[in-house]
Image 1 (spheres, rainbow, N blue to C red):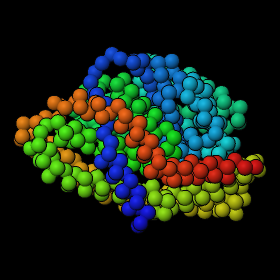
Image 2 (image 1 turned 45 degrees about the vertical axis):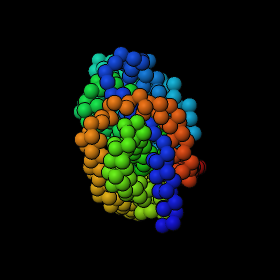
Image 3 (image 1 turned 60 degrees about the horizontal axis):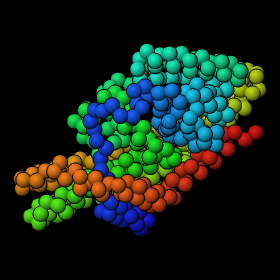
Image 4 (image 1 turned 30 degrees about the vertical axis):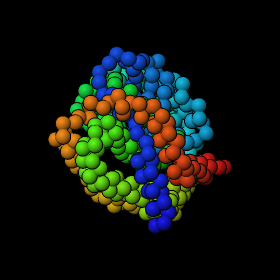
Amino acid sequence: MKKTSKFISILVSLLLAFAVLPLTACKDDGGNVEENKIMNLSLNPKVEFILDKDDKVVTVNALNEEGNLVISAEAFVNVEGMTAKDAAELFVKVTEEAGFLVEGSLGEEGLEISITGDSENAQKLYDSVKGEVTNYLSTLNISIDVTKVEAYTEAELEKIVADVCLYLNESEIKALDYQQLIAELEKSRKETAEYYSQELKNTYYAMKSAVIQKAELDAIKENAGAIVAAAITAAESAYELAVNGLMEARFALIDENGAYQLALADLRAKKVEYLNYRKELSELNVALSDAQTTALNNLETALVNAETALVNAGNSASTAITNAEQAIKSAFDTVISTIETLGAKASDYASEISVKQQTALTEFGTQFETACASAIAKAETDWANMYNSLTQE
């Protein structure tokens, strides 16, 4: 518990020390985002590629824990700048090396591909990527279905952006068009590109949101006069308490001795056993004996149980997280309401917040990585060890 308290104190000190200006949610014509796309590949590991107007990879992100195994592989170091076709082939190559794909009927059911973006261009890119992947699979003597999954609707994309851009409210997100939503997602993905842990990324997003909100309060407190400042001070203690509660709940999911990380470690171990044995059987090129089938089924059952345990560990923390998030919203809304009764508005101090933002974003990212250095390094090491266990001859 001492370790947890120390970690939380570091995060809270960041919250109180730094301020970050929220990204402006408005429609504009800037940047080269008109043709940006999102390409998702799913084969149990799920990976997202954000592509630029030339269909080259801008950033890559895991969409589930096993996706982190894939993108943390050394082969993915130079994925940025690759064409979508080459990135898809790389995804297949790494998953095949790790044993997710094997010859014969023991392999996965199929590879799913979705392309989000302009519908006509997205279809052309899907056809191109599918052709590349199908040809590559044939060289590996692997026959699986490659199927198209529908692109994100605007509502679905709004939900994804809301989950990573917690500092944008519903109306701000609604003000973004389809391509601007992709651009906002890209920015958030780049910030967490080297965090090979779903829960570590979630902790980052939550902390950044809290820092941004606190910046708004600090800017108003510093510039709106003594009466407003006193009102903010009196009202914000409940907000800070709620933030502490959220950080505690989030830290429980990245604590290496916590239930979630222990369940994840067990899942890795069970996955290695199952995939390695399945690969061994596939290389025999003979019909399986009853004993071999039973052994494989037993390993699969153990894997399914480990997957269930991981989900349960995550669910056990979700109530505390949800309650804390609701408490934060309520407390923050109360502070803002208090300010407005005194004639002040947050929008009146946007420039003051902007001044704070210039150095705060970089400082926050650096300080967060320092505070979470152990968790960041451990996630990368654990996936590297798992990959080595799956690819060793």
